[in-house]
Image (cartoon, rainbow, N blue to C red):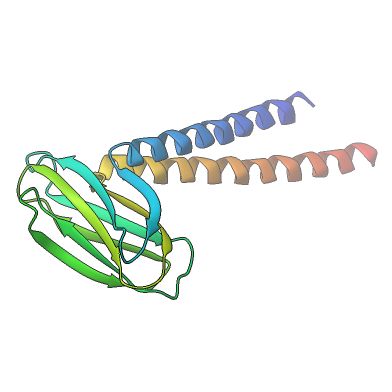
Length: 167
């Protein structure tokens, strides 16, 4: 009976490590992103600003989520440090994500405008996470999967051994 207990401890440890890595991976991915939530209407825009260094990253990422009233269209613009519009999108779906080139160092802005009724929006802008940060999320997923498969395997092993001991 000691063997299943040791195996359960090992797969439980794997699941615990996977959960901790998942939380840490999400923290690392989102730590450089700036986010704001607010109401956007005809006379009220939402602006999210972030400092980006063109020597550290060449690509920026932005996303918006329309929390209420998804039937409305909002206009999303990215402004470079010189307040020049480098990208504009019209969004009419709940979640939208886009990328932009970081050509100069400075403050980049995500400008969200609405010509219709008031709508609650969540906006995010920042540097695109590098491969190392993104791979941390996949590693935690694999560790969790191995732990859960191991948990099922140990449970099946225990049930089979229990049936043998009753026979």
